[in-house]
Amino acid sequence: MRLPGLPATPFERLAARWQAARDSSEIIHLDAAGCARMSRATIAATGAYLAEESRAGGYVAEIRHSEPLAQLRADLANLLGPDLSAGDVAFHHSASTAFAALVDAWPLPAGGRIGVVPGEFGSNAMVLAARAARDGIDLIDLPVDGYGRIDLDALDRHGPAGLDLDLVTFPHVPSQRGIVQPAAEVAARATAAGVPLLLDVAQSLGHVPTVGLGAAAYVGTSRKWLCGPRGVGVLAISEQIIERLVAPARCLHTASWDGHGPPVPLTGIAALGIGESAAAARVGLARAVGELVDAGTAAVSGRIAALGTLARRRLDGVAGWRVGEPLAEPSGIVTLVPPPGVDPHAVRDRLYAEAGILTSAFATSRAPREMTGPLLRASPHVYSDPAEIEALADALDRFTRTR
Image (cartoon, rainbow, N blue to C red; front, side):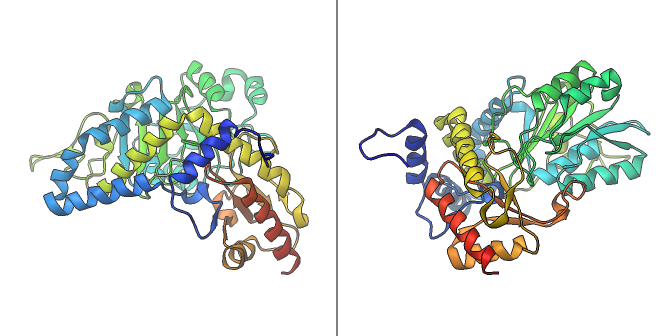
């Protein structure tokens, strides 16, 4: 806590700015990794677009909002660049559907090999398992340390054979453990070996630095650290990869057909489109990403990392709960392993119902090849306050001891 009379720090000024941009909340919101709080301006932009759809028609409204949507693509490309442009970015229903579309379209030989991590997000792991079963592809675990972080030294000890793969994919930041994978270092090694990297940035975009990672393709989402409305998935694919994808011809939005012979997929990233969508959510996301860019991604990441470190140090050991990642990890995701006999789902429910504190709880299906038991997760954003972490610690102690 800052002493009276001392000037506010840059992080405190940033926090005050983000707090002022949002309506006051009746709860303590510590679930940015699930669905973060939108600003009033983001909500207003979404609502204004819906009103225009009512007045002018949905397709007319989307044409009239082509400029903010183009700016959104450009901003997302810049957040993931520098080797991407606005034309390399498209939208989907969610990060999960975007990931499934890319894996389905990725050209892999029969008997091919995909490098993965045990801590892969459950939905993505299901998609990979289905593709592997369908096409006889082997899923090869990359070496990881005790936290599930890719072990670069172990990878290097295998030499070129360690990346004798056709594709590498993993989440930049897992949702069940607040570590930051060395994505740029893995991408550099994979590129040198001629292996593309498909990186899931659903939990990192707007959270930790994502510029210059060097992946061939990215998938992300609107509702988490970007503070946008739900329902927008993001794909960004490098020019070198997009023409190699073999996307199925699903509808008139993604393929052409003259009534004879097989449909012909559209060229480029358009082949991975989805047609009808909630355009209002995209317009809202454009405003939210603009706010992130205006605030400065380095400042946002720094504030979130500082809150994450503060939370781990305060919560580790409270009533027997233990933090699941290094205390100083530069991440806002804080996972908590319960003491014996304590159900994280029941504690989550009591935190919300009795203390007004929003957190998440997960079963092992979240990452079934890594998790050995259920977890509780807290995830503060820029607008969170250290006092809210203190409130969580007190309530966690109380509800654990009185279960």
